[in-house]
Length: 409
Length: 107
Image (tube, rainbow over all chains, first blue to last red; front, side, top):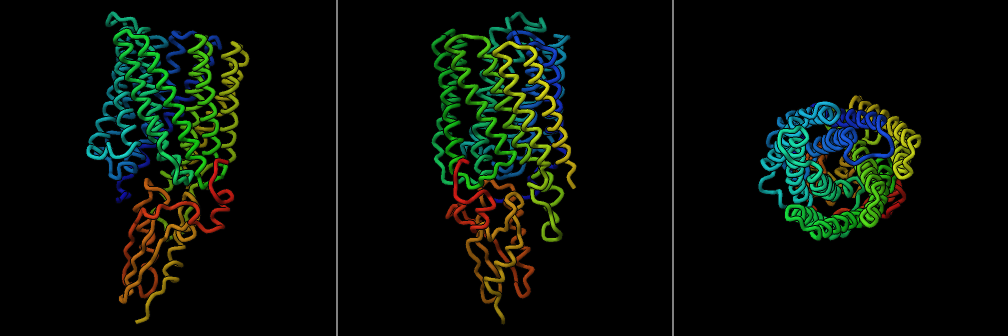
């Protein structure tokens, strides 16, 4: 196995994903200020900011991180690293068009949706061309491959919905919304995280000798669950949808068991910003699961919204920001300092993280997630705006920290 | 001809630092062995803390460069092996302490 330095994509290709991703994060939080804590599911402004967050922040950062991780996982260089600026442009532009479409100009929705489908398709094609004969080799690569298929399927479903919202085809978008969300969030985002967690958590935590069966279960259950759910939707079989959702919930539980198994075997027991971010992320995931189960049993809309909030902003948000504090210093170090090893003193990666400012980001964002989450249950606008204020300050620290790390000399 | 010693080789490799962990490769327990033949050619057998280490090739290059800086060394080859799998118990005691107290565990 040889990972040549040529395999690592240049920082200038990856850094825009992270910078733009956090700017979309800030934009979506500012947008949420215009809404009230009593959120209507089908409010187009709400949907617009949710898409800005999930595509503009979550997916853009994940795709950027994958540009660096794919060569590591597949043990070979990118086939077409030049595709990444195109992917970046398509996903960013598509997100902006979607936001404008949801806020004011519905006709833009179909264009935004189509551009995002193309962006994910190019990402999938690049992955297949890069690792065509090794994609099946490990659980992580299998998970990422399936996840990209679900991402493309989910965005196509979303695009069909935008055609309905734009008035181009006659279709009721609300009939597809749960299939669209399940395919993307469970089949796409969660499956990617199940795969990447198997590499990133042991690597950064120095964990070895842990049981990997829970991850295998999580992988199988989530794919089975999403497909069963979609079959139930296509053939109008509610029982399939229920069983599919149960399977997805069990997959998330298996993933949590896997993370605990890795954590119990980790040799690194420092409470750095990465570790503390993961604690908030998985605490949010557990609370989200509890809220989701309550929502399924009671049918309470507030529990659905809270589950979504904790999953999106708590779990995904902290998983991503925590890993940015590991990935960005590495990329900067590799480009600027690795050629100097043995010739002059070079910094360690932990010295390239603005610790105090990262603590502020973590603290403000954590308070924001849970205060705003509480406001969704209480339907209290003051609490909602208070929570969002904490999140906004946290996000401003985040962009400051990212720029600080990228400019480190 | 004077032969290079293992101690000299290990001392040279201990100048190579893992930038993520902040410790040298010898103290981390990543160096499994060093063989020196009669021509002072050195074969280093080592592992990495994780299979997906993005610094895989860089580590090999740094170890090779460090060893080849020793006077009399004719050349150096570095082989990465995955058996036995590295774990934190192979690291020196001060490394375990610097990483949070030694041993494994969630907290």
